[in-house]
Length: 265
Ligand SMILES: Nc1ncnc2c1ncn2[C@@H]1O[C@H](COP(=O)(O)OP(=O)(O)OP(=O)(O)O)[C@@H](O)[C@H]1O
Image 1 (cartoon, rainbow, N blue to C red):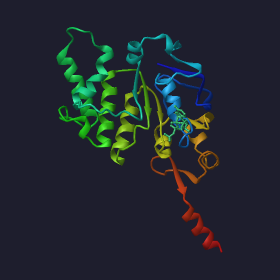
Image 2 (image 1 turned 30 degrees about the horizontal axis):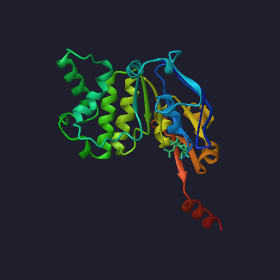
Image 3 (image 1 turned 60 degrees about the vertical axis):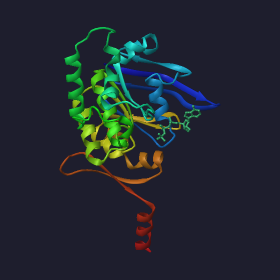
Image 4 (image 1 turned 30 degrees about the vertical axis):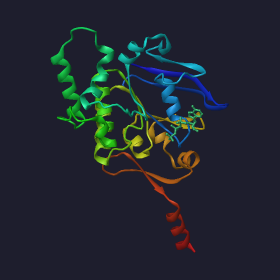
């Protein structure tokens, strides 16, 4: 499934949060969205997954406008893990994951055994096999995040939208989750703060700053020291890891620069 956002604009309380943003994700592509805090990443993702109505522009899935689809049809095509996915209600892990099946279920009947198998497979994939009866509210941030990913898996949508999916995850699960997303081979758009993860996993990256797309391209095209200084205001060195061949970004903090200055003096 290919996805496009065309000239999306959002204003709230007299402020332009998104200005004429266009982006596209080709079928099976993993596209990253990076940018500083408050640059508009969540606003853009919310306008794509219909949590927020843009003032102008449209979103299409396989060239069909999303706003002409029913909520059920949209949910069959698009699965979302947003940033604020908390619930105050007492649901079990199994109940939360099974919510991903709602767009596919009819009122009566259904293949109960098949549904249970899907639930189990999804929990195995996120490392939570046997956690069905645990209360969602009692889970750690990282465990909750993995449950929400499992909910996406059972939804069997072709397009995944993820807002900071590695938030709360320890390094092992960050890598495991990004590997899993890559293996799924779905059309994926994800906001990421960790630029090394973006470099390692994304086919292409959009950089957003002040509600506008500053540039887009492959990780090597986008993640240059000049762009990182310009957009994030940090000095960085970008190299290629000798073993993995992946881009590696090292950041220099103020104390390192101060140390270098002292050495030179
Ligand atoms: N409903 C709203 N009304 C007014 N301002 C809003 C609203 N929603 C978001 N904003 C503002 O829009 C800007 C973009 O917010 P957004 O959450 O999209 O940024 P972000 O890039 O996802 O940030 P972060 O990296 O911190 O998660 C912020 O300055 C935010 O305060």
